Image 1: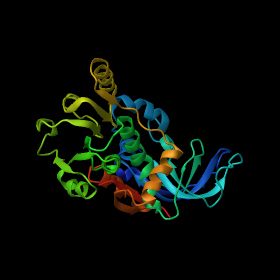
Image 2: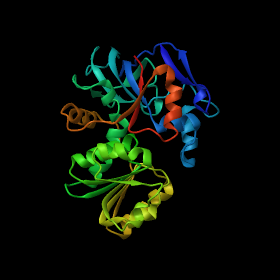
Image 3: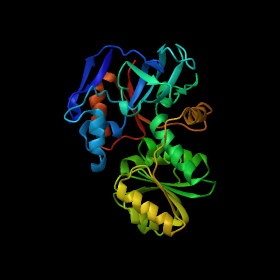
Image 4: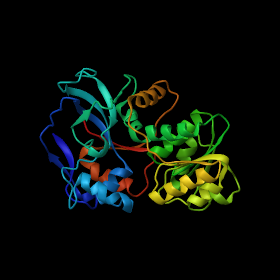
Length: 323
């Protein structure tokens, strides 16, 4: 099979298109013929190891300490079941599915083996592979965090880092739930954010949201290294601060805020689960929401996709077309 292999930790040039043996599914796995995958900022961080310092050692243990051990990037996939393991009775050959590959990665290849624990999502017939592949990282995490805040119509929601895969889904879902949404990102993404429903946009290169005097019921923060104190000060008395990217110190500060005030700080990432995957796919199928897709690259141009994504330019999701 054709696959993208990361041969060294470093720049996009370390990614190579290679021929590998097609994998064989274990008893509780299915073999998926991948139609599309994605390139996320997380893929780029793994490739370069420019991760938050506290995560680098455990990540090296998983992916290889000195150099990657058969690291095929791609955290999301959508495709067709080609074979099933001996103990799989919930899926069959020909089923169209989508989901996360997790820390094993592997999506940027013609085939990937995926455990049915948890079950992947099932692609609705009328929805494209490209649309559903945006769900497992961006959609699931946005849904997870916004649910924790219990958003109701009329609430004011601020989305920081609103132009990425999780951020765009955050804007889309917050609007779907009836919130008044303010989206924060740089100049090149503001028009797109307006187009997906943001009521207000802030260009962080020229304006600091915390100086406007506005208070928000929910702040959904997708940027590692945001100013924690500014975000807390910008919350209403019982507001929620949702951190999709964080570190141990900010987690401890969040616990302290919850102990000493009525404000809430949440930072646990979502777990891949069939119910939420299918729920979001049904929203796409019904036309109630539409994912944001920036660019589609063929598999052999995955390095170019990485180069584009790591510059912080992408709007929503960047798709890798595999077959």
